[in-house]
Length: 524
Image 1 (spheres, one colour):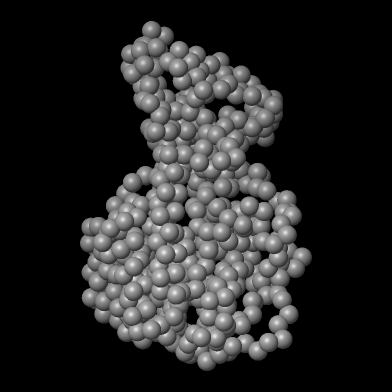
Image 2 (cartoon, rainbow, N blue to C red; image 1 turned 180 degrees about the vertical axis):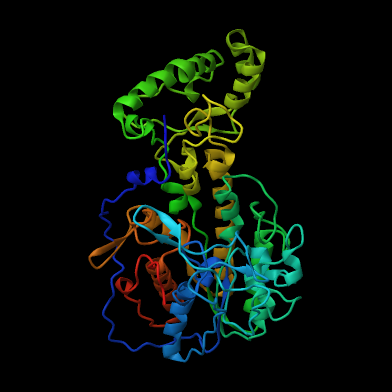
């Protein structure tokens, strides 16, 4: 019925140009570049993968050099900014070794082969254990870090990598000044005169990329949403206040940024909720697809629809259509579980064991939906596109097609109840960030508004448009989460705008056209 769904859904990507009037073009500037009231002589950047320059699902030299923080440091150098030292990886492959052994959790960066993202060839050479770097480093961005991790002593202790749960982060292990230090302590040891802080994305992102599945709060595997309120090291507001209070304690000025909604990045918006056309279901053959639809409606969707309607839940499912795209079948754990009712309904025709199995599978099943309101829309994860149409482990025919005859599971989809959880937390974080920025007199970047603009039409610069379309939009890298080189340049410009507005600086935006939308497969 379905032979291969991998990357087939890329045909649904939007390539249309947008008509936004917003222009990120360079503006002529006759005034000299000045620092204003800020001192940029010692700039230290704190944050997570975004600060580090993570791109294409990896950290590598060119990505680190193209980080928004390094772009800022280059501008700061014009007004007396000092050296911006980066804990560079060993190569442009990405990935990590642990004591000489490759760690599959940290693989090579991705490149586009004309069909889809694939890992670049080559062997990683950056060893977490055997290649410790001597700092101090101005770029303190640590991929994977949540807000409270920046306060955690021992976050760079190699022994913590083997703990269960882990208590250390391999990226910080590479360049921490000592086993017992914290990211914040190493930053403050440099007596920064100016800092940037963009943290909190991972406090919601881990939960989102896991499809709303709750996991442990740890530096590598943690996916829980950080509580919006609580003491430093526990809740976001207390943690963020401790970070900003410490960073400004010696009179340093700085710039902070808030957190974008996860549903504005292509990892959550690329795969359509309704890709099941006759052509797709027939693996390219429309006639085969139409026959498949007739069979599915007769043997599965029809009986399910009839039973669900009898239990007052008929809106969970509609028969498949031959004339348009049909929605994916998903499991929604927020629904009333009708397993017992379906088991009873199917027992006379299927027998008790099979009926119980069908009841368990479809008790909280429904078809995915998309509306104009993100609060009522399902988001299929980018990683799920390679799962659609494949066989769930241990599930026999005829229910052996994920998303078609067997519901995609919680880890594959963000449903509205999970999106609400993420939005509620993000909104609370952003209130905290803006409040501390105002209280401490810091420059503030509304990154949420910027990414929303990129998502809702795009940002124009010159003759180009920067959008969130996966692969083609130019703003995001091939992991669907982190910016592309051009996306990082846009972020740098937004940081400079905020700095200029707050401190009277006159930094000029970089030309986005000089930054590529993708890194090539081979980088020197």
